[in-house]
Length: 237
Ligand SMILES: [Zn+2]
Image 1: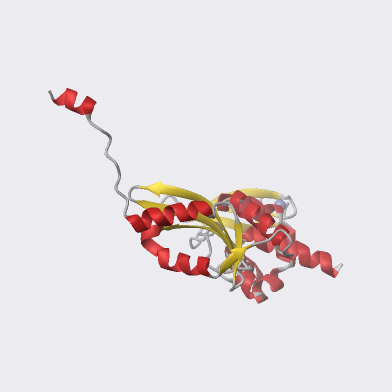
Image 2: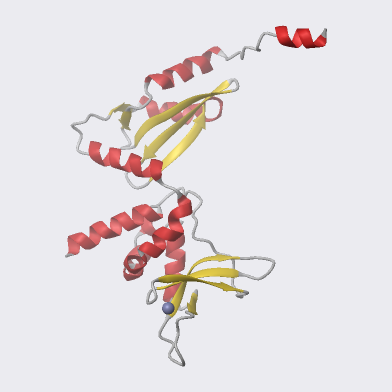
């Protein structure tokens, strides 16, 4: 009896409150279209997903400084989202920022903070060369791990002799890129610009630091800092 009841059971229909349904369908109407609002904020709805009795929206946001991909739900922060929409107009292809917007969106979608370590190693000379610029530019310094590391290097901290050192000459110097506090002993990965290689050191007495940023709320991300530095150096040539 019980099994036949289960077989005949009609799938439960999720009841969605009228305003939420209205909102969800409205979001679908602007899906995939770039907008700019009167604060100079650019955005584009990337996905609209029905979650339980609510709608969730994933969108790309670019405030002219930093870009991010945000998720918000109808029930949670509809008010702020609606406010952003109310001052927004389609970003026309003729707008001088259109191509820049498309480029930033592509970068944001492809961005993976896990790659920051590789990104830092790959652009190490550029970053080191621009230490002062990074530390003196609010958007580059804000909440960026690379700024923390550069500041430490500058003071002679977070530097360790590279195993490539020969004899008494201390001519190879490694720069800590990541450090982990482990119960078995602290472990760090450092980069030697002379060997152009990373090396690992265990049992190091250091504080826990990491290069992986947790989506900084303000300021540029590492890939944006690198992009900006390349642009600035090109201009100065
Ligand atoms: Zn070395």
